[in-house]
Length: 93
Length: 114
Image 1 (cartoon, rainbow over the protein chains, first blue to last red):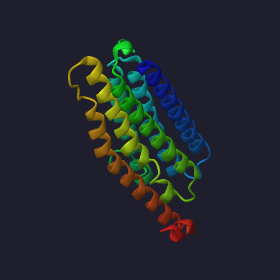
Image 2: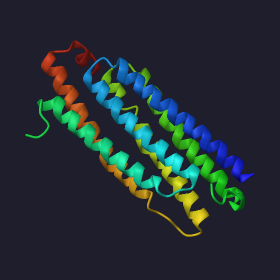
Image 3: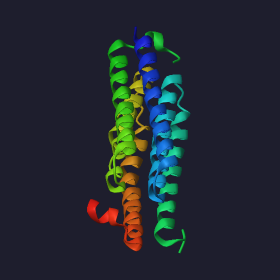
Image 4: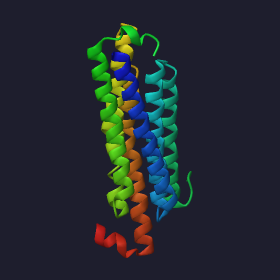
């Protein structure tokens, strides 16, 4: 009983997060200006991080925690670097 | 799911509730990010996924690994703390960059939305 509940909730959660990633890719594709695309990349990173975390829950493996933390750090650094670039025209002043 | 057979039912229901809460909030935030009209409205929508989307899945992960490992495991809370700290920083930098770009180009769209 509990394994059925866990299996279906993890499957539905992964489905939702995959739809969310597809929607943010859609916004990156159509996004009218550059800041929409940067925000789309940020949303894509967050959803991918949650998807990896849910995948780690599903397999019961603890390794995926480190991967999702790494994705979160890289997403933050890329968003900060891209917004600095949009503001000043260069990343490191 | 290594030992899902002896996983207790109350913990399974709790984990399922928090996982579904987090993923549906992330999906709602991204739908809002796709649907909303101006950039400054779109800036707010994905924070639903970074605040309670991350929080729900992190709480579910803590419950799942603590119950299946039969000892308290709290290291997933680092992801929650990290997202809580970094999201306002990155979104404020992005909002300021967008405002700077709109003012530099005299975009009439920014004046009516602000």
